[in-house]
Image (cartoon, rainbow, N blue to C red; front, top):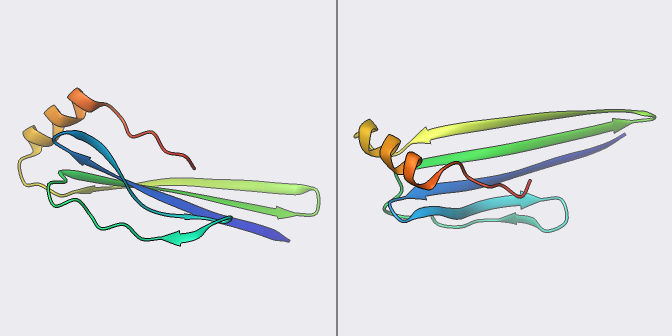
Amino acid sequence: MTASDEWEEMHLTLDGWVNGSLQYDSTGCIRVEWPSDRVLSVKKSVCHVTKGDASSDAVTQEIFFCHDDKDLVINVLIRHGSPRFSV
């Protein structure tokens, strides 16, 4: 049985999306400080398990609001769109 557990974080700031910490099977975990001006953070996780000829994927996204002004967050999201993950 083989397993892959990769994840990546993206942070939304007033200027757009910023790369955050990540974990890839090929590179291990790389920690990045959160931007001080983030209004929203998203973590995408991908778990892939292979056992014999069978395989399965589980993909999750966790959303963290980092600013109390929800209207501001929505307006910044509209301006910059969704994050573009590599995993």
